[in-house]
Structure formats: C-alpha cells, structure tokens
Length: 303
Ligand SMILES: Cc1cc2nc3c(=O)[nH]c(=O)nc-3n(C[C@H](O)[C@H](O)[C@H](O)COP(=O)(O)OP(=O)(O)OC[C@H]3O[C@@H](n4cnc5c(N)ncnc54)[C@H](O)[C@@H]3O)c2cc1C
Image 1 (cartoon, protein in one colour):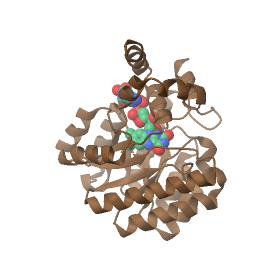
Image 2 (cartoon, protein in one colour):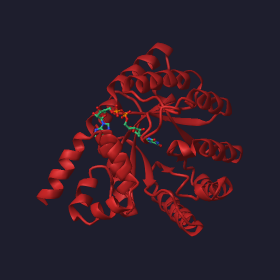
Image 3 (cartoon, protein in one colour):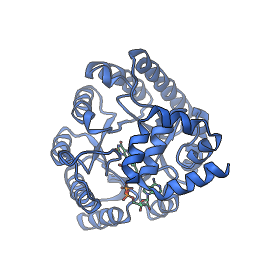
C-alpha cells in the first residue's frame, strides 16, 4: 500500500510543495542528496575519491515541460562538465533525457545530449543515460543508439524489472555499448514489468550473466547482497578480472559495503545526486524502503 502511494506522491505537485515547505525535509533528504549546489557535489566527490571510490554525478531534474527548460538544463550540464574537467576530479555524469527535452521529441533530446557528449569527450569524460519510466524506454534506447553512432563516451541504464530488457541488452552488447544494470525504480504495470521481488532478482542475475559474458565494462548497480554475491561468484567462475566491470551504489546507501568491496579490489562507483530538484528522487528512495518513511516523518514532525 505505502509503496504505490509514495510513487504517486513523487509525481504530485501538491505533495512536493508541502514537503519543500519543511526546512527539516531538506535536512533528511541530505542522506541521499549531496546538496543543492555543484560545489556541494564536488566536495562529496573529493571525499569519496580520497576513499578510493569512483563517482557518477547527477544534476537532479526531470521532465522539462518547455523547450526553454530543456535548453537551460543542457547549459547547466555543459557548465558542470567544464567545471569537473577543469577540477581534474575523475568522475562521470548521469542524466535523464526528460531533463533534456525528451517530451519534446527524440530529435530535441539527441541534439541536447550530443552537445553534452561533445564537451565531455573533449575532457575525456563519460556520460550515462539514466532509464526513466517505461513510457520512455523505447525512445531512450533510440536516443542512445543514435548518440552511440557518433560518440563512444556514452552508456545507458537497463532495468531488470522490465520484460524487454534481455533483448535490449543483447542489442546493446552487439553495439559495444556500456550498460548499467539496476532493478528499476518506477511503478510499472504487469504487462511490461515483473512485479515480485524474487522475479526481479532472478532476472537481474540472468541479465548480469549476459553482461559478464558479452558486455563491455558493465556496471552492476544494486545494494542487494544476493545480487552482489552472485556477481562475485560469477566473475570468479568466468575468470573475469576486477578491471572489466564495476559495482555501483547510491550515495547514502550501504556506504560501509561500498568500502569493503573497494578494499577487496573491486571498482565501486557511487551515484551522487545534487541540485534543488531533489523531491522526486528522494520520494523514490523512500518508496524503495518504506521503513525510511517512519524516520522521515518522525524527523519532520519533531522538527
Ligand atoms: C548507481 C545506481 C543507479 C541507478 N540508476 C537507475 C536508473 O537509471 N533508473 C532506475 O529506474 N533506477 C535506477 N536505480 C535504482 C534501482 O533501480 C533500484 O530502485 C535501487 O537500487 C534499489 O534496488 P536494489 O538493487 O538496491 O535492491 P533492493 O532489493 O531494493 O534493496 C536491497 C537492500 O538495499 C538497501 N536499500 C535499498 N534501497 C534503499 C534505500 N532507499 N534506503 C536504504 N536502504 C536501501 C536495503 O538494505 C535493502 O534491503 C539506480 C541504482 C543505483 C545503485
């Protein structure tokens, strides 16, 4: 019951206004979000880098309603790429195509993404396209294919809960593309997505095998110990060396496990979101673990 409600609230303007009116909400969100300014994100990146962890920076934002908003988000990304390039920090970027105008059409998203990829390439930086709700899957894969024809510094995310993902991965492997595999964070109907946790975990493992066998530096993005253990078992069995793939986890979740894996010699990348538009991201994190909601509400009403 709570999970669907939180997914619904993540898209509600009214709920967003309500939550943003509590200064304490911002404080609680800081568990998952590096801060509102690029400077905050760069500070977190420095700290994580000092611990030997890799970073993917995500400037939070989604669903640019007007073309002007998409252009503004693109400009913000260009500034960020420039700043990170100049800082010498080693990290890459994650972005959402709806931020770059996917709602205005594939051509708009390809044009804006290409500008970012061009600049990132000049700084030897990599850009990952996040995957959003299933309404956007086909278009997102299409944008990736078109971008990949021109750029090799672009990768994509595939969600294990989607029934179509096995064939998407086979196609991307053939293209030589880099995949981040995650379970999927949106509320999806049974017609397109597996609904139960065991089914999703089973498919995640199956897709992980496909990526380890035929993929190109895949990223296994999960905090699920079952998935992590199966990945470790698989790479040992196939004799895959630790420099051929990476683990990824979200900022603020299982931080100790991130460091343990790093100490064992594996590449671990932390996804670090920042920016003022943190509300939908924060609500998706609450939906993944409704126990966090109790903590959040207690803090809110104590505050
Ligand atoms: C690097 C990265 C990038 C991602 N990019 C995308 C994307 O582009 N598109 C997309 O749809 N999804 C994305 N996700 C989210 C992903 O789809 C899942 O929703 C999320 O990772 C939870 O699934 P899990 O595999 O960690 O397993 P789960 O079974 O959900 O969680 C396993 C365990 O992890 C811990 N945990 C998980 N979530 C939380 C939380 N919020 N708070 C506290 N503990 C928690 C708990 O101990 C839990 O028992 C990304 C995830 C990561 C790690």
